[in-house]
Image (tube, rainbow, N blue to C red; front, side, top):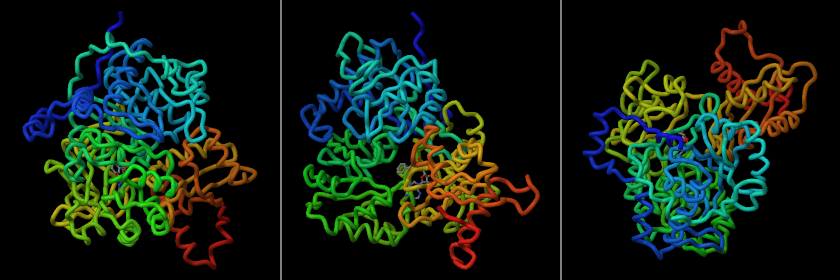
Length: 556
Ligand code: OOB
């Protein structure tokens, strides 16, 4: 029999390990322990509501054990990485906890990801298996799985929920207690890999440990007043860090509350669910919060159970915050977080000015925050600078990516968030903008470089520069400036080209602008970053000066 793979271990220097343990942040809890304890304590309470289906804590525990036995029966082993692509259905948690019980490491993909991204996650994590649904949001993941097997020969298993066709069927897994005698994992080992928002090139993998992640939602529960009476709705993708742990579904399950899943982001669908399930807490990105706030003013549904509406993932301006409060009439909490770790919240007893104008302050007294200038020197309180951070739940490095680590972490272990912020004397942060060339499109983070690479692969594209453009609804939209080679392709053709390459739809440019040339200085003298900044500036200037506008920028 081959040796099982050793679970990945994330490294904080020993001095920090001691500090975080002594402070009581890291308590040696693990996901299998968390599940068993809650199943015992809350057994008959409702853990998850998914459409007409309701799982008690006992049923969630049973399902997780069945998934774990089935994966082990397929020959997968402890320490194996498994890419999971499941939408907002109860099975998402069945599979996640099943993997934890089996000692395997989920790699969380979003339902919107396509073959290009999934292939990258499989390769980067050296995954042994891929678990997906037959169908979600109108897309058939079995087609993706077939292509994946052809591209990634090292992938050993595909497991499908629903009609599995030639693949292993999740529903056919059998509960087998004999397979479930595994020892608990080391609390400091990696529990799962999250996907980064991708500031340069392809997404990086974020290793989170049992100790650090459990601390982040346990502490979030206290800040957000989550109790066993909380009924939290997941409307954003369940695999995203915000609805997973800030305090998210995991926080709510930790507290013995109920997770209510919404597959739809349409306001009226969600409102019906809020009314039916008496939802108390809910997390949204700014564009959805604004749309729902507007819809809430005319709905016939009773939304009075809502206590706290959290908004995060992208900047909520003070004016937008006002509209959200007026629309919902419940408490607003701003959440500024990142899958790499640091999460900031406005507190439930903060005054209105703080809630409207800031993105909150860190969870932990041991979250170290530096706001620095271009030279890495701290700026005075109240001035803008780059946000660097380290702490008890912020990673010290990406998984298997030395080049990214050299860029993204300082020598003494601070993570360069890429965000430009101001910090107030009492530690509250206000997000001003961003140093990196990524686009925050309604909370989805898109790397300009990655989109450029796809466009450059088109035979009629000579060069491409991709930038963010402020957008009333999305916050930012993706705009691609293109210099053509030979005949000019139509913009829809380029968009279809990206779709056919199998990338997530949210990465496809919203707007394509054809230009004759990029450079007015000698080629090579301008960095991509400067080029993007210049094109963006010129475009926005042209928009504000309509006379110059239309001739040079045929907008699609
Ligand atoms: C959350 O996580 P990610 O990993 O998708 O994105 C992190 C980035 C931050 O670095 C920042 O650029 C932006 O998203 N961001 C915000 C923000 N919240 C996130 N920018 C302005 N205002 C905010 N409130 O997006 C995430 C993870 C956990 C909780 C909440 C959000």
